[in-house]
Image (cartoon, rainbow, N blue to C red; front, side, top):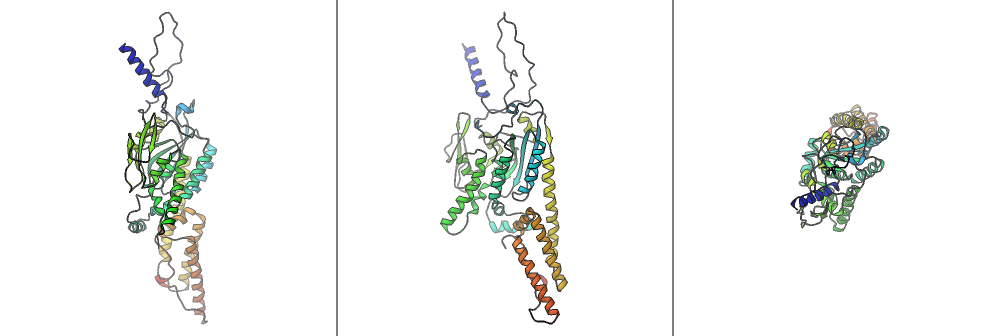
Length: 435
């Protein structure tokens, strides 16, 4: 009797595990076969495949209902190692992670036709909005970007996420998060299959809610609703439920989790029996890799790319690295010009005493303007770190043109205005955030 109960228990456990979305054990592998009757001829079976890796521990929070093509080997059923195309998302949102880069990558993906796409995300935009002006001043000194400026590009991030999802819909895709703090969290969760590195965090998306400012309560409420609504729309691309999206974006929302069968049921309170993720009104929900895996938000934790592919069921694979090269080369080009342009603007700030100096200033600004028009990343970096926009450049050029004209008239002994614009008191323009 005890033997029968033990066998029944094993059967029930095996049945439950077989229904999980973890990579399944190949047929015939590690499965105890029933003893054949003595008089029966043993069935001829194919040799058992070598095990690729033991499936990850069963996670109660793992969801089985995921939109999008599965990247797992057991679902793709390839008869060869896959060609894996890596798409980096590194650096600043809206500058390094920019549509110009991904237009080139999308074209390359369509030419290479990989079997599987891995987005690799490593972006830390900022921790929060405390001591705002101190953060602005520090950002100016270190040539960093204030998180609010990064978050202000949320509509562009929405459009890029939608484009990537649409144009890559025919490819099995997985997101690998090496770090995501700040507005980049919307991309971490915009794809349904997501893994994290051991030290990765998903945190700080409440920076979007901080954009809804102003003194008028009604206007502030409308702005808050608009900004957070856009962010939640990107999260929903990955099939994330409303309770989770609200808690990630809004500091005033709480989050806990119950277990419904083998799926996570997110709750907008602290009464969940499985996990309490966010119990405060001060910050939005934050996830370490462990909590993300335990609650089913992440499909697993991978140390590196090879480990990620192993968890997906691919002990062997061919890496297509042309996307990495496109990303590096495109961003290196405009960043090189950006470094050079800081020296140009240092020269612009030098004292200038005559017409030739004013002409030199004008040439510097015209070179800056040409680079603004050529590279949106270059322009945005200057605006976000130094407060210098294309319209301000045009105005400064016009002012210098008038001053050069006035200087020439003065030299000719005619009326029409005195000399101005020399020295540091000339039209230097805004050279710091918020000025």
